[in-house]
Image (cartoon, rainbow, N blue to C red):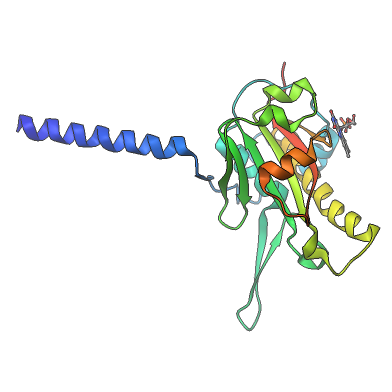
Amino acid sequence: MKKTIIFCITAFLCLLVSGSIIARDFQSIKLPPHDFKKGKMPKELTVTQALWARESTKSFKDQDLDPGDISNILWAAVGVNRIITATDGTITRKLTIPLARNQQHVSVYAVLKQGVYLYDFINNELNLVLAGDHRSETTTGQAYVYDAPLDLIFVSDLSKLSFVTGPELYYTAAISIGCAIQNVYLYVAGTQRLGAVCRTSIDTKLWAEYLGLSDNQMIMGTQTVGYPAD
Ligand SMILES: Cc1cc2nc3c(=O)[nH]c(=O)nc-3n(C[C@H](O)[C@H](O)[C@H](O)COP(=O)(O)O)c2cc1C
């Protein structure tokens, strides 16, 4: 009996250790479901109140974000908010941001303490692109970024917008990314707990290499999110 108990405890500990190794690898992070309740959370502001509260925060606490907030922030940025089934059974996903011809050219990367991840908006998960803490490298010298727990990097795949050319190509891409950034600003303002700032102060050449972007993929902004410092 005693041997069986010891065996069970050892087996349990082995499972725990192997589980923690998987967790430490952070290859893929399944995010908690974003809030599908189409009403206010207890302390959340209305959209109008959030518009009044929207502002840029440039001083952050060195404090990790709640996974639920990470999920909601990414969903606000480029989440699926409608799935439309045509009469022939074809499924179309539509997002929280408007997109020209619904061409889903926007990718969002989450730069966290544990690594750099690409947000998979269909499966609501983060997939590792680059291990390690690269948050301070998302700025070209703005020190307030170093303490913040999350930097979002917004990328447009311009090859998906081949129906527009010249300057129209860039502003077609940038309009959707501006909407994603504003969605995050409004989500953050609504929580009354978080702060954010959109930035263009990023070394786009370095990050194109880090993220393995193609020539058609263009970094069009970054946004730092976290708890405002007191
Ligand atoms: C396109 C764009 C680029 C920006 N780039 C930076 C930046 O690189 N660094 C920064 O600290 N703030 C940046 N900001 C934030 C502005 O400084 C901020 O929005 C401005 O001071 C107005 O403040 P508010 O957002 O609180 O209204 C940027 C804002 C925009 C719209």
